Image 1: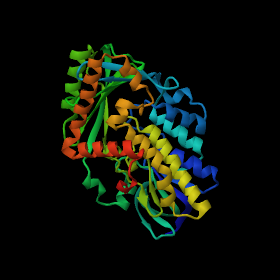
Image 2: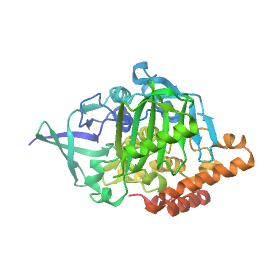
Image 3: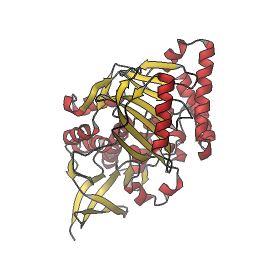
Image 4: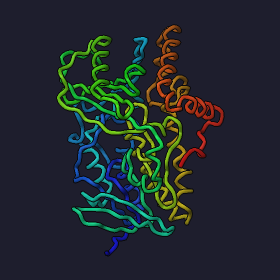
Length: 404
């Protein structure tokens, strides 16, 4: 069987892939992406982009077309809610950011990058012989073979590329279900200009809400194997009783499996040999249910690393791990309780919001944050979060020795 030959093969055709492709195509490399679905395809995502993600899209792909946005088309900032019933609203630095419809925004980015995509083509495995990576794939029941100097896995949290490199990894970590339901609004005092996030261990590991296309999203993260409907009912009742949110029954829902442990505890997975792993496949996931900005930046770094490795004749992993350290630091800062309290890791001024509170309210918020972090204790993450946070405070970085 004839093998198709490329300089770089990317698995997945999402934002991380588009960012990587932009760097590679601009450098004159021959690049292909394998995408198991037909484009444009649906993507489970709230759609709220961070300021740095917004800047990245404009700088690399140009102004965003209206038809790739949901309504409301933008988000002004984020509101943190705490069990003590204190709420802190913070505007994003630089102004409102876009509310992306991932089905169309990803397709727009892919096309803008110049990436050649083989649609409805599923990656099935690879072998890296040290010089070339041999990739197997399937399309319409027919086996396909590719060779590439480098492979970039940008295929999401349950990455098959990562599985090919680390077959036992997925069994070694806890998985979470992240689900959101869409409900028409009867009454909703929550400001639709903001993304709302609850630091409340009684609601789940991850709870958010915001307006989208005339409906309200109620989203929740919880351990895999638990029941989405039970968690959703609990969140819906809490928002009704505590915030006066009244909604009609859910019209539709969507969900996916995630693991945000790597971001919390600095245990990213960047690949080995000539295979790079990036985006959510590598463990990048911001606290505010937003993985798009770190997917874009880490994807671009993966692309830059390949270009740099070729130009300098250096091992690509050496280049990638040096360049990706800044993104790992930025992402883990999002979950670092000390950075949340004393810094501004979310591109919104939390300290300024805290200064508006009384001393008693400030102490209540700090207690609520640390009580929320205890929800991760069953996974052994609490001590790791604390130890990594202290190392970051002393060394101004997170140790790279924890990365795969």
